[in-house]
Image (cartoon, rainbow, N blue to C red; front, side, top):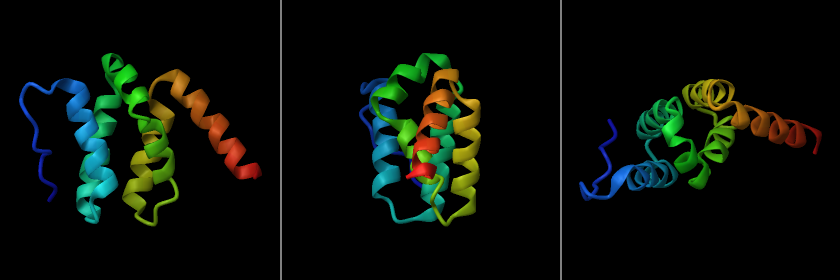
Length: 102
């Protein structure tokens, strides 16, 4: 099971989200990746997090997860790309279309 990122309690939401993104990028554990992606997915439901997630390029992380061999990661990514902020869905559709035609 993934450990929670070690953070200074004063780091704030952006710092916490950055720690999640970093953990996802650096861990080799598939269980940890699943847990982190699920946590990021939960944050994506709250509109107050959109700017932080955009700044951290979490949409790219979700899109990159679509090509993972781990089916759970793919399912999380599909769910988030389709359910998160409407402008993200439009950007994701655009990026997916560009990727499929190249």
